[in-house]
Length: 373
Ligand SMILES: Cc1cc2nc3c(=O)[nH]c(=O)nc-3n(C[C@H](O)[C@H](O)[C@H](O)COP(=O)(O)O)c2cc1C
Image (cartoon, rainbow, N blue to C red; front, side, top):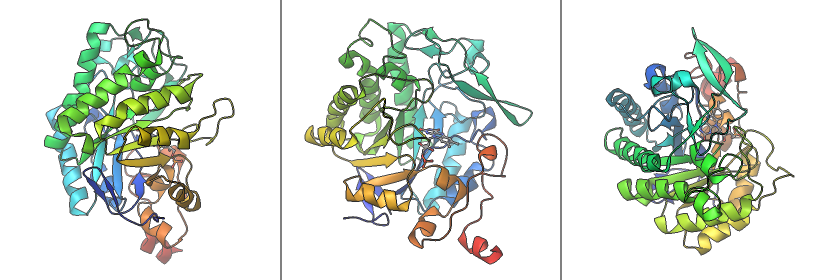
């Protein structure tokens, strides 16, 4: 059985170990351009086998939070390029998370102050983050409007263009499509947010259409072997729900299998919360078997609430790599700390969203922690 510290080949990606930096929004990119401390933040974490960036908007319409970065303007791509160059110089592998938030947005973040877009005009009972004079404020999302069928090819194309720009101009090794946590793709997948009766709503076949078309377009543009997708079958994040996740996600995985993706990244349970939801049971091993039986290759990444022991158990049971979120926020040298069973710094929630270097790039690495202990 592999250990967390063994290398892994995931499509075209070469991971030095099986410890992955989970995507983490930090709201430190004013003007949607990766901010001044981003380079240090990612470079400090280059020891991860794979770095997945924070959610990064594929279009202005895809923005849902203050000060999150994008991939749709030259200045954004240039800033990312400096980061990816530094991560590569430090020996790391980095992909960007392609994000369209759909209804989880606010008119003040949308082009022309317009309503956010969604599969259906159903508001999410959830909050987004706006920043006022450097202070993060949680506010209700704005009521969305339903996307017309004629608009969906444009959304798919935004993902495709962003993926191409990410690898060609941004210097990324690949991309992760954000299909999780109640954002646009997840909104189309799940009945709670998708009340459409056209080719993108209703049956499982229809509701998986947008996710598949995005993955197909991105893989077609940059190669499936440097494309990943993140899914969260049962998370309630951002007020998303579906009563029958097992057949839904098994169908989606069967459709994705022929694309030859570099990885599938699954959040188990409620993102950042319980790993099991009794009201929404899900058999992850069965979903993986379905994917493999359909010819799905590439790596199977798992996430949510992992520590070292649980992560090794996941590898023993067939996962290929494990993504760590909060532990990686607080421990830039997480790989080394896990290897040496060293004590871990505790994450400070008050500095998760917004601000500067504090709580972002000033968590001590091991030698410093030992010296001051
Ligand atoms: C501050 C913060 C920001 C996050 N931002 C994102 C994001 O941009 N994209 C995403 O898919 N998940 C995001 N997540 C979820 C994490 O990637 C991860 O799924 C979650 O923290 C559970 O993993 P953990 O228990 O190892 O922290 C975020 C979580 C936190 C705490």
